[in-house]
Amino acid sequence: MKKTLMYLAAALMFSASIAGAQSFPNKPIRLIIPFPPGGTTDIVGRLVAERMTRELGQPVVVENRGGGGGSIGAAELARAAPDGYTLGISTVSTMAVNPACSDKLPYDALKDFAPITNLAIVANVLAVHPKVPAKDMKEFLALLRAKPGRYSYATSGTCGIGHMIGEQFKVSTKTFIVHIPYRGAGPALNDVLGGQVEIMVDNLPSSIQFIQTGKLRAYAIAWPQRLASLPDVPTFAELGLKDVNDPAWYGLIAPAKTPPDVLRRLHDAAVKVLAQPDVKERFRAAGAEPVGDTPEHYAQTIKTEYDRMVKLVKVQGIKLDQ
Ligand code: GLU
Image (cartoon, rainbow, N blue to C red; front, side, top):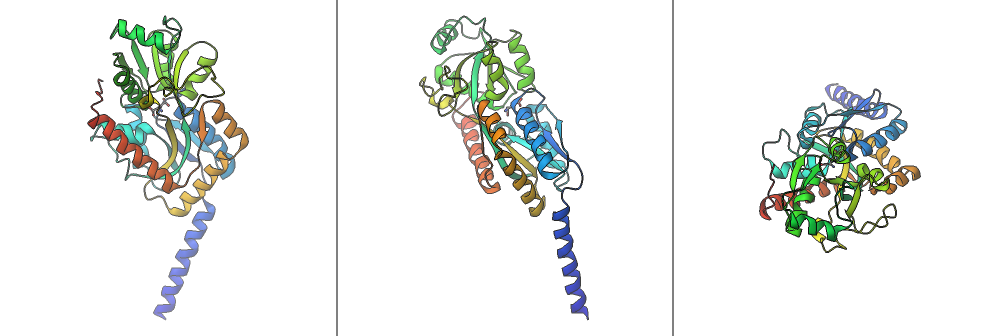
């Protein structure tokens, strides 16, 4: 009798968990974007949220939680209930550079999250306000060398990927420019477009429209080859700056301990979205390559990037001057 009851209880629990997975999602999902509007995190996050809404049959509602170089939004996700109803966009900054820069972060990038998939690998760009009197990288370097410290560069924040690229650029070219961190690429771009700061180091999707319309002048992109959407802009590697030729990436993550069947449902939806031809086209036109890999593969990317950034920050002696 006791045994029968135990079997019954086990069978009930099993069918409850199947029912849970089948009914997920049965209410709206929050997607935390750890940077303000106007940046690439927002651009990637909003497109994916809109399409996942269609795939999942429930609204995926975007919430911008900028600040602290992405760490405020990432910490909020780490504290959220692991039920699949709060997700986040992960960036190189929140998962690798911030943790490499500081041991006082309010979350553990490698333990507090369940990676779902890498959404896109994204080109980076160094661009200036058109008033800067240098038509290409050669003239730009001559200008920087003639006036060390005269020019400043804006980025999405201290210990963001833009900051790392800016500092690597300084080391590789033996130049000195001053770093001005913002809460995200959106606010940083506002000041560069207005001419208050001359230089922008950004992820390409947020800057590309301004480059194509002449409001910014791009000197180089960090990408394996030139892009069809910016055919005249060389890669850093072409210019002999291999170490600066570093792309960024944006992924989808959930709090650690989110049930595996829920994670699988979210993964399948994200991968379907990334396979849609117009999504691919929109990413590619902006200088991003859709990914859609397995959670294991994405977790490995995060770990590899983290190890690399620890090295870049601590061992190679890149000075984080803010
Ligand atoms: N990719 C940037 C970073 O991780 C964020 C850009 C933005 O969305 O503002 O630093």
